[in-house]
Length: 393
Figure 1 (cartoon, rainbow, N blue to C red):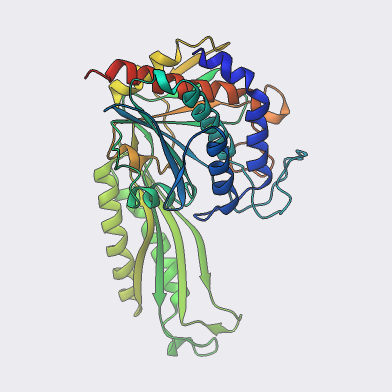
Figure 2: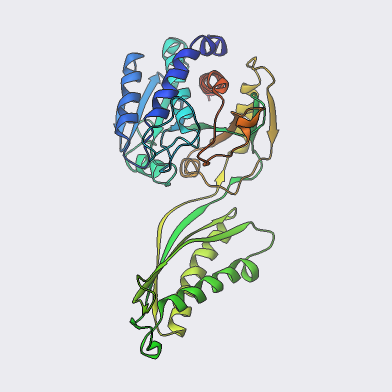
């Protein structure tokens, strides 16, 4: 099958699916509308979907070799200010990262593969996951068996990118860390409350929190290897309810990101040690809780080059690839890549005009729907070509 031509012919359906998901944006682990819509569409295409934790999966074809195609489908808990006529009306959620594109592209890829199922020299496993933004979705589906029965031999995911890069541009990394690890932490500080007129009777948790904050900066400035990329951000500091009362507790929340496994392990250990030691110096206590985390995303080198080769076989206008892309953001597809040889590739969904001025996660961001047939065709074509190449291996 000419997947690119067929995907182009299904453009109206691609846009319709994307816009439904966009208008009905849902954030987090539980996505009832998106989940129901994906299952309904797969059934409409003659595919039998099943629930996998809070996500959806299905398998096509016959044979020993299995490739996993993954799409996330969650939005962000933020208002949308794109001005689009199909914008999410709730003012509470917005597809500001393009996951509606990913789900729509995988739906159409599933339809293409189903139409060509008799010719598939192996099996394609679909993964529609929630909660990528909170780094819960891949873990949830792994715990519920997405990597079992059948176990994938390879995995592939695409991610659209806004901005001004022209449609046809794709970015990948076959030689090193593509995206950073992330660990989200909370530091619960306990002191002793008192009236502001009697500070000597208190153990001030705000004072402790300030000193912990300053001490954590030295983990990057003086303890991290300059050749490693390490980031530590405290984005929330909460304490007290009145101007004249020293509170009992304080709370710091933040994230740590690295591009090296060893650096990540050291930062996790040292953050705990520093927070507890600083709190003790000032007479209080600190408990460090890591609420979620994903490792560095490292794509399989040989598989990445192979997939890029398959992408080049399609007659995508103005197709240009850039190797070596690396980002300090994080991606929970890394949990799949830890266990299965995997490839993660960015596809430009940009505009040359002012619509390309806003980055992902901005309430005004817009993504170009011209990338939809390209992404769907890449997914179906790469899966089919990989199975054909490896079916006898």
